[in-house]
Image (cartoon, rainbow, N blue to C red):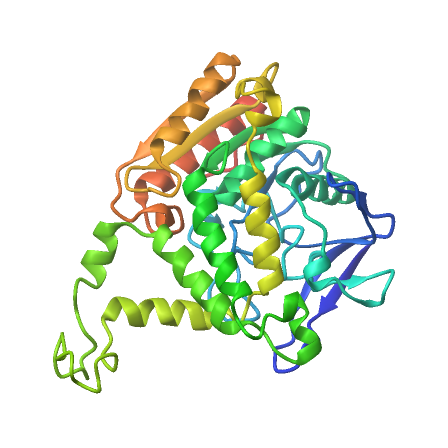
Length: 397
């Protein structure tokens, strides 16, 4: 059934969202049966009578279901409101768009903040480990609930792209087209290392309390803030950081480099430091530390080739899904080399695949920013796929 869920935490704004509630729950890859299962989601546009125009948009690590409307916790615009909407590349005048909060998240879907049926208390750090396969399986439950047997397309950037690839690996018959953006078929050793540094920052926070910080009326804000700062550096490029900040010092600082003997040695702040601290402080107001740990670990586990004896083409054999793989030239978190590896595997599997590397100096976050070439690629691929799928072409498209 569907139900509206409101926030109840003290000092947080009240918000509601659509939520699928599945009493019987689901089995996780780790062997735990998770029940009940809740998946919070937002939808945009109108579902066609034949239910053939549905696009699933999968969000990245710190995203949520509010991709095209203001986030109720922060009041900020939806994280992809420039891409999804009437007349936009993912056109809600033509397509029915679904965006769920991932399993393990903290915006309404079952996760560490959820109440554990056996104890009547939140799972907190005892929430079971999950994988991309579990996340996608929960989304499949949502589609079953909505009566959508087959998606026209699944779209996602970064961790959202991992989900898109997992959809094809696990449910190839349910997806006509896939658009994985700025992603990879595995999480690299470097990315696992970055995630581990972030996790250790959380563990080192005195307010961590072995993950049961809510029992103490606390949150590991310092550790989670540092984790966000660390991650945010990886989302940008050196060019973007230099262009935006360079070596500029905040205007109130008297000198760029104070004398070593000065008591104000650390009293001054570079603009880039101020920016990162702002990112960290705002993040802790909207995200849960246990969810951060849970979902980053799910990313680390992700490796489609390893699941098939090192053969990356194996998950995509006999796949009839049409692919468009997109990378960005300055993305060093999920570099183009990893997208090319994916494309070669898709070609080996005989899949219908196109590939675009977009020139940009904005790093990994380019897929969230104003990139006209990305807009043209997304619009062109979806419209072309719609023609092949026989979707009715609306006037003006």
